[in-house]
Image (cartoon, rainbow, N blue to C red; front, side, top):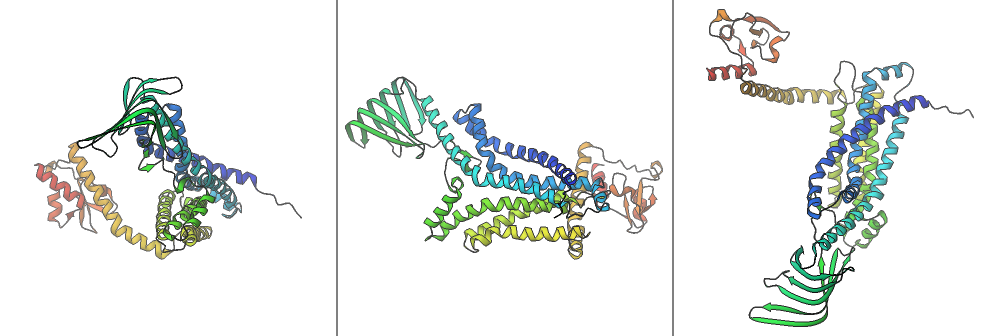
Length: 482
């Protein structure tokens, strides 16, 4: 059999063109996400007194969860920008002239997208659950360290919330001597406990610390009654509630996000009699698989979107890609909610967004490969009509009013003299077709249809011409100013 020779030079060239903008987009988007999460992180850093190494550990545990969403947007943006650059520099035209079709350019994109999607899947299935567990353990450790640092000899500490602890002496093994504890939990009058000795232990799994007191008395007051209890050993269990919410998410709560795939299936089976609870574990299970596949599909969709650029044309790939990206996650969120409400089966509902976008990607890729527009002509005409009738007038109205406000603020409004002889003959330009005239600050002042000139607005109005909306507002502002 003849050996198949792959065009490695072509593949490596296209892959290089995609990876450069991918890494650039990844760094920019991840920087934005980092800044958004930084402010809530700083609250925890200041509250728990976290040093720099612990801060790096804390951020590294959040990294996989942030990457899951950033990497999908980055790979799509990288493919779009790479093919936009190739199109603008006419290199795609050169490929096609050399007999290289769009399908022959597909393998390097598929390879890059598959590798990035595989990395995303590994983060989703392995690192995100491990990161959440490590986050919980780190936060517990930091909270306990704060308590340990707060409990000092001959000082009252309030690091335990409603419990105030006083220790007379602390030896080198963290054993206490001469302990005083005031317990105000769910009480109006405190329970006072005094003991000769004591110690504190921690339980990571229960997120709680336990104070063990020995040889002491417990004083409780209830109205006029006072009760004294002597004890040999007394134990206080205190759940830790440190400031562990980052942007609304409780990072110390081990939930579905910290479970492995096998644990999710086991939990779903355990709650099989309660479908509304069982389905939540299965949605988490499928979500970790759906999003990496969606990342791969969005990357392939970036090829036809990047080819919409060209010399003399606006690069519409990035805004179109952003629109498809937002639409994908809206569809994903909507289908997930339908699954959790038991409207759709789990497998169908969770994989439906990928099925829809796989079909859309295939159709758009086929149309572009056939040298057609990405949307059918009827759909494009409907979009153009909506844009011309609704979006464009609104945009122009806002833009004109913004210019008026800026001209008022900067006091650079045009001064219209009352003496017509003092006015330049080219001050007023008029459109004979629409019978509209424009002043010099207007964007339409030098339009191709503006073939008539008037010496001032009064002469133009007497001739049956009216000012455009922008010039009308400008004239009104001048009248008010005068």
